[in-house]
Length: 276
Image (cartoon, rainbow, N blue to C red; front, side, top):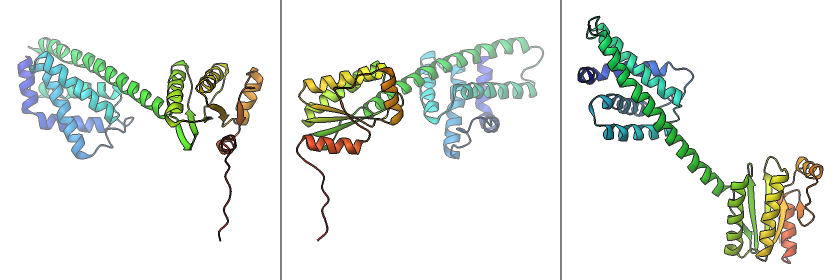
């Protein structure tokens, strides 16, 4: 029966894909499919159809390779796992309904086909969920690493003066990344003054303050001064309420004032030059 199903799908592939595309377009909660170009939609549909057939006629290794490749593609396209499962269900329903209409499936062989359908679809559904989950976790992990690297970089703004803009929540793992980037950057850029800009940090609690103080102490140990800038009024109120001691810090409300102070520490200042 597997061979007969594979032959039927292959022989009616164009019609099945066309009907399947219409069903997928009618999934109103998912915009990722409707916004695809016609060329991309057709190519993705053909790949999906080949994936569905591969479980019937290819070796397990070839099938696993195909499903992992497809999982990576749909994650990039923005398909949710719910949408992928709906795609599998719609495809199998179309094949079953059409085979029933053409009397290929009838009362005499119904029980056998139901069993074969279960053996066909259940492994696809399970392996798809597994492959999608692994791909999604890997993608999120890579994005997290990239975000951490981008949001914890030391940027030289003047000779001997560098800024590290901090964005988002600071946890223990991220604090370690900040510390490493900070120390490497101080040495690399020969910075004498480092400005830690917390404008983009939504909450400063005792743990976050502890990480910042540790970073400042580390900067001082390598011979540079550290300044905390971007302290918003609500952050200042939180720091006072929690009794966090920042007496060893020079702090300013804005990055601009911090840069002015850093220039003063390095015996420089910004002056206006009048046009002649």
